[in-house]
Image 1: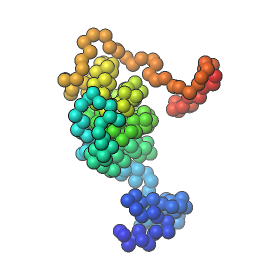
Image 2: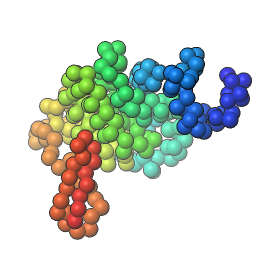
Image 3: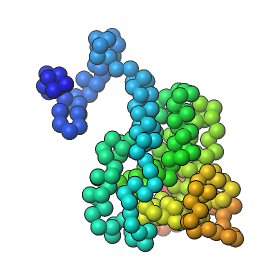
Length: 250
């Protein structure tokens, strides 16, 4: 491999991460009319492979309290040497998988084999995945990744109710989760609507967490997030066609 990379050093940066210098080389590798078959990359096939590898990596490595935090009463920023602990417990391949599985998934058409792994992730790994994003300070990308998941499930004619509830869970509790990883289980899970997807799927696995005996949400509140940025009253707001962005005027 080193011999190959040495021969391609004019277009590749060969370090701990292989990077391509020129977009023209990428275009060449993707062009069946110019690139020899032995080097040709099929982006759809490779996106499928990467999605499956990311999901398999998370299945093998995600677990409860992955960084073995001793207390739920300490914010992430106050945990001694948390960055070093996260680097040790969350290797680069797991960090990549946690951040990019949905990007690869979004490139795919309906696929039964991929759906099996996606369903396992939703049913068993979702909260552990949020742990990793919290610990590597990437919880802000969770909502857009779940949006991609929902889009793929709909494209595949699969039930998206749990994924939709997962996205609402993130919208409601991202601020808390970003500050303290254990509060996924202490603040988020107990206060999520009990009759909806995330609580129904996960709450029974954590009988020792906080229990809300009366009251609580039956459904998610209409206001799940507050967008800041304007100093004066907002008089107009428009949503992008894909529902991902809001533009407002004051």
